[in-house]
Image (tube, rainbow, N blue to C red; front, side, top):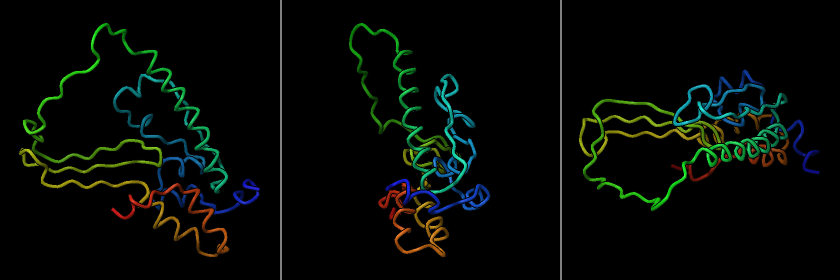
Length: 177
């Protein structure tokens, strides 16, 4: 029943996804194999082997399949990380320095990471003090739940809107932020 209700619902083309700022599994469900961990690697992702699951149809079913395949890839990544951990003899905890002694380097920076829902982006401006002057966080749910859902709902049947919203995997508290 789920497959029947998800196939062909909330269809988004790759061109639409790019124009609307869609990221993560929702973008990969339109056939584009883009993942920040692979295309703009950070931490140790450039040392890990993993695939970027994609689907072509861009509908609710494709978004579900991409997320399912990404769960398997996450397990693959975790196994590689666990295997690469050094053998530690002794305590595994280290004291954390006093955060009040830290300072935020002066200047501005923009960085992004791949979250389970898409790109999580941070823009930070600092004068070099203990606290940044400005911090802006752009989460994927903001775009997916508001802008994309609105556009995909035009012309849809009322009963299909909930399925489309569920398939976009938006987090309401993130949108409310």
